[in-house]
Amino acid sequence: MPKTRSAALELLRAVTAGPESFGPGFGRRTPYESDPADWPVLGTDCVWQQQALPGDVLGSLSRYGRLPATGGKGEVHTAATVTLHRTAQQAGWEIAETLEEALRCPDQQLRDTERITQLDSAGSGYDTNDNLSADDVVMELGNYFNPALAGGALYYAWYQARLGPVTIAVAVEGGKGYTRNDLMTVAAQAVADMETKVRNALGVQK
Image (cartoon, rainbow, N blue to C red; front, side, top):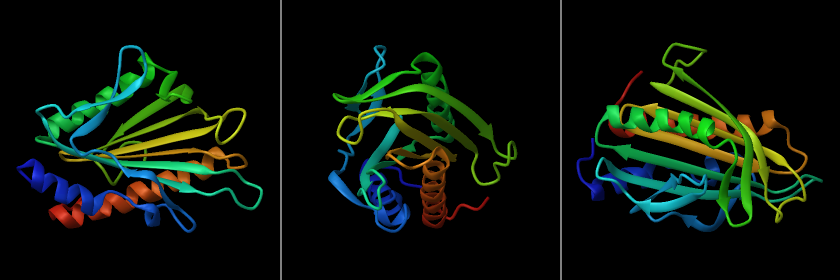
C-alpha cells in the first residue's frame, strides 16, 4: 500500500479508468486529467468545487472522457475518479458522505452550465443487495442538464465502490437517445475494470 503522495499518484495513474474502460468509441475530453493535488468537494451551497487534499487523503485522480454523438444519439460524458485514503475507515467515511450529499443536495451544480437534479442514492455493504465485489457500493441516479449536449434533461448515473482504503467512482452523463440502463451498464463496466486493476496492483482478493 502506498504510504506517500508520490507513490499514491503512481498507483492512481495505473488504475484510474481511461476511455478504453468504458467501451468502443469513447475518447478523451479536454482537460483529460484533474490536478492530483486537489479533489472535488460539495459545498454547503450544493456547488461542486476543487479543494486541496485533506490530510487523510494520499491522492485523488479524475479522468474525463466522451462518446461522440453518432447514429442519431447525442454525446455522452464520463468521469472516473480514484481516491486513496490513509485508512479504510477514512474511505468508509467518504462513502457515507456520498450518501449524505444526495439527501442534503438532491440538486447540484457541477460547473457553470452543468447541473444534476432529483438525485436518488442507495448504498450496499458487502454481501447485501447482490454486492459481492466491494466493501461498499453506492449508486446515484438523477437528471443531467448541459446546454452544450441537449436542450432538456438527460440521464445521470453515478457508481462508487470501496476496496479497503481505495474508493472508485464513475459518473456517466447524457446523451440524448440513451436510456438510464445504458448509462448504468457503462458505469458498472468501468468500475469493475478499475476494481480488477486495484486488486492486481495491491494484491487484494475478495
